[in-house]
Length: 252
Image (cartoon, rainbow, N blue to C red; front, side):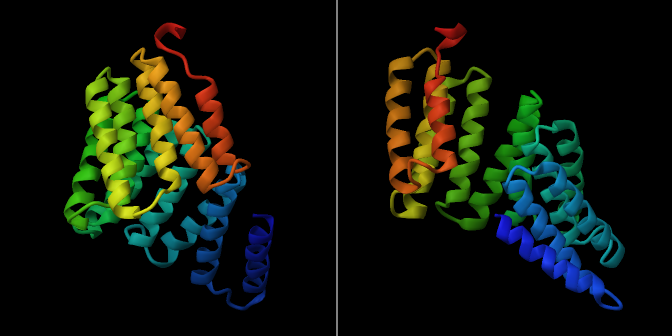
């Protein structure tokens, strides 16, 4: 990660010494650098880099260009990862405004943004609006891909957790089963998302008071993550922490 950021910094240093600086290339480097910083948890630095990229895109290609919309998406995702949900909601609304104007209604990029909007709204407790966004995303994916796809499965997982939050355990488990069908057909082999799916299924079961089943699913999910990602992977460790903290309703 540090080497990647340093490489972008070197590129930007070269660009800035040119007269005039190549703004398109600078914006791409700033945007990519921001994504790396966000992945590394450096959310403030990522926000600055992505905001600088956005300013260049707005000035050079316009407020309503798809690339500008994708930069708004990256800023929204970074704010979401940093826990700044109201800011994330404002930014994802900007991304959607642009994308709905320039993309076909069945474009998967639009579904990606709707899926992120659903996650943000769920985090804010706006469950009905979140469910509408996630269901629209899934419908677009199904129309675009015309068959099973892992992106349908990923959106299914978020929808299943939301259904669980709304007290619909049966619906949540059915949605997670659909996620597995999409993962199985799309990946064709064991994938880390299979492990993540089982960990999230465990969360649904625990919330419904089915703690023994939840613990069994969690153990199976962590085993898959260890096999596919390794025991020392940060995602494996964070998922194991989720499993260790599992409790039934009212802390049962």
